[in-house]
Image (cartoon, rainbow, N blue to C red; front, side, top):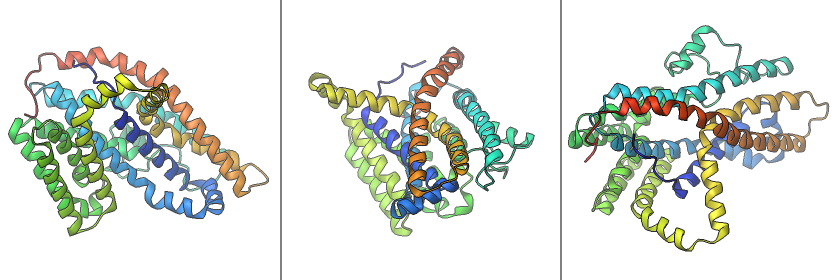
Length: 363
């Protein structure tokens, strides 16, 4: 199995900011606490409700970028099914534990608070659909906020791995063609948002940015990518697409210059910059855990707030701040004590799946 690449501060920073925006979007959207926030800071609450969720497209572009880098490091000789199975095995254990926590917290919240945002007790079919990452396709109620993204990430990764199996040149051509089709056609059809085709435009921009970063003609690649993105925006302006395009272009340029930047920073960084990078690395590494855990915390925070006799907007903001802090600290603990040990358990099995692979997915 290839060595894990060193952490890159710009990617950790993007993960950190995007994850926090998604958390704050949910905090501004659900339960009586969101109503208190809307009274205390109406403009901020409205902005978080309307725009913060677009940070998902930062994750989509970044996900395509990192998936392309990972798949190409694994090699083209590896069976598609083994790559997809390893991805599922990495996602599912922490995802399943977070779902269990969400189910427990939902039951506790229902005892104190009657609100439509609290998921009902799950049925067996709901549980199976979530474990299969097909809950939206199966049209069942989600057990936690944002779990659709985990399912979509898995769909996109599986589709990308399948396309890249077609060979170095053909695989890249298929990725670019499907990316263009998504940007120009599929992403303009909201009824398709349960399927990878809808989001493959943003995801494919990240893949293309990774490919561009390894080319001697990186600026030509990125210019072509920008022209395609601008053409799609001219056809129908979508703020989410503009954000994904900007993220992909930035990732391509950062990747190209990352070695020189890391060398320079290693030679002349002050202590506070080193501490900042370490903090960003920690927050970036725990961003998936934060994504999984913040909704169960929000459920309990809303239930606690509903039991208070005096419910002022100021109190709502204070409870939300406490819930945010618990979410961040809990995510760090979950990543260190649960997610990382689970990954270590999976690693030997993943290495056996990788054994015998050779070649590269993309030239």
